[in-house]
Amino acid sequence: MTGLAVIREIAPSARVANDAVIGSFCVVGPHVTIGPGTVLIRRVVVLGHTTIGSANIVEEGCVLGAEPQDLKYGGSPTLLIIGHRNRFGPRVTAHIGTEDGGCLTRIGNDNLLSDGCHIAHDCYVEDKVHLGRNVLLAGHVLVETGAVVGDLAGAHHFTTIGRYARVGPRTPVRRDVPPFTHFYSQDHERIPPAVRGVHQEGIAAAGLAVAEEAELRKALKELFDDETALQTKIEQLVSMGVEGSALALCEFCQRSLQGVYGRYRELLRGQPPPEAAKFMPPQEQVNIRRPSS
Image (cartoon, rainbow, N blue to C red; front, side, top):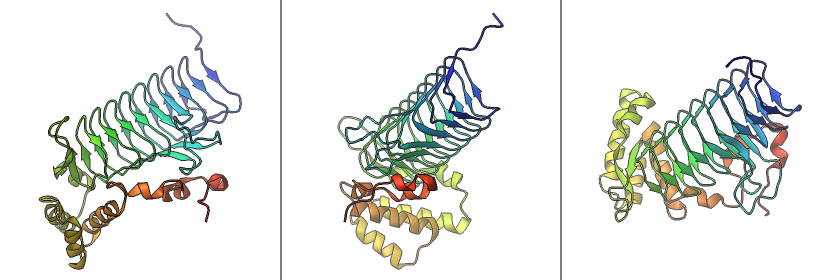
């Protein structure tokens, strides 16, 4: 049948670009901004102080900008900021931030969030990330550029998944996953997940120069063929003068070792992470809580 009116609810104060498409049965709240070319396909709910950039596709049943499922959340007008050219599969959920976590949840650009993903409060998903079906990110998780997370994997709060790393399906991520590694469980019930190889596709996607790639591969082999004495190996590589991605890998591993239970971001509990100040719009900076001295 044709000629039926589209039933939807868009608050008068919402800022929606002229060429954005708001499908039937969608709800757009009063503090929402939706950029040019973004499409909410059907039955999408966008709440809170949520900003969605340009050319995003949001499929049926998504809920973006709901309040955090965190008892510490005090009701402040915290934010969810979404960049450009992202694709949200059906039933994806993403929450606004909390006051103690920096007041911001952010999803960057060119990401694919598959069916049923959940992005909890104060998470940061950078660019070109692929989250598989029903991936669950607990609060305060950082997923760096180019990472791939397999179906049904779950990330413990305050973990970091490094650049161009790959997490296997059904893998519980309880500690930081180093860049360019393949991290997965061989036996989901008895053998803990670990680094079990190099993410070859990730290295290819990073587009490194030949010399930088060779140095990175050498560092990966040195660090993870056997993870014993990891601190000593890091120090040796740094003293040898590694640069670029190999040095960034060493620094990532060093931060994880300095953290709690292998999670560097545990050290940021109760204070805004550096990403909050970096990505918070200037007019909102005053809302970021600073730790008391």
